[in-house]
Image 1 (cartoon, helix red, strand yellow):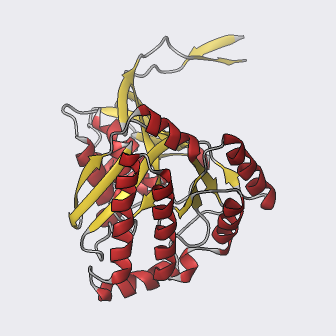
Image 2: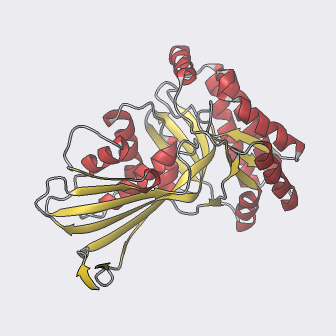
Image 3: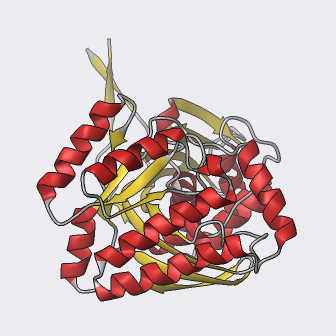
Amino acid sequence: MTSRSVRRPLRVINSVAPIRIADNGGWTDTWFAGHGKIFNIGVYPYAEVQIEVFPRGKDPERVLVQAENYGDSYRVAPGKRSWSKHPLLEAAIRYMKVPKDISVEVSIYSEAPAGASTGTSAAVSVALIGALDLLTPGRMTPHEVAYAAHHIEMNMLGFQCGIQDQLCSAYGGINYIEMTGFPHATVSQIQVPNSIWWELERRLLLIFLGRSHSSSDVHRKVIAELEHAGPENRKIADLRKTAERSRDAIYAGDFHAFGRAMIDNTEAQARLHPDLVSADAKKIIRIAKEHGAMGWKVNGAGGEGGSLTILCGHLSKQKRKLVKALESADPLFRNIPIYLSRYGLRTWEGPVEGSRRRRRP
């Protein structure tokens, strides 16, 4: 047996960013809402990005994209003006302008399932922008990273896109966001004693419905109605109020009040359109009620697929019984373990270890 050296990277850059749950006040962070108030929580599992940096070779497609969740590995030219397999990743690479004297291998991975309505795409975008930012001098602030991610989704790719997911991933923690005029917003991070933080973390569940969420005709109908209703219409105003109530409840450590705000937000979503709270979501809510849950929130915009955040009561054994009941009720329902993320985007440079070697006959 003989061996052959595999090229050694010049640098290895890492980044992670949390996903988002319990977004009370969602729908008010959009262009048609005018102004908004949003509460949300950044949690593990993270989106992860790693970049290996090499000297530039002769290939103009000098970025290797490895989207591990999809099993895709392919090359792109950093300045290309059309998209292929993963437009969000390719647009971020184009936007961040990879230095001309290097080539890179970019690995992207997330333990959160795609289409879970937890801002996974925003977390991936924030983590990727943060990692690419380390390729050049100077550092973007969390706010700048969030707005770059939002610009990519809305302006470069033309997606309907609010601002809260990117801000939650960039900042992490428990957030109260005030959007004064789309897309401009301030982020107030809610600082609470460890006892409240730990108790909130212990009580929360993230339940994936087992079906990927995607924009639908229902969403388009809601947007069309809200666009003409104006920013002060009652349906949007009701959603804004749940964000304020959530903020105040967490500061006070009042889990009953927080649970009520979650429920009221979900009911306000249903008033936008009944199908935003799907039959599967209603099934989960019914089982959660039977097991003493204090609150539930259909994550994201709502509709078919996606996930729910559930706030459980004071007994951990009841929480475990609820998980068992949910996963028994439908083989697609799945509990995704979560931990509150005290940090948002994190970037760092790791050591370059000895040359990797692979064997060949």
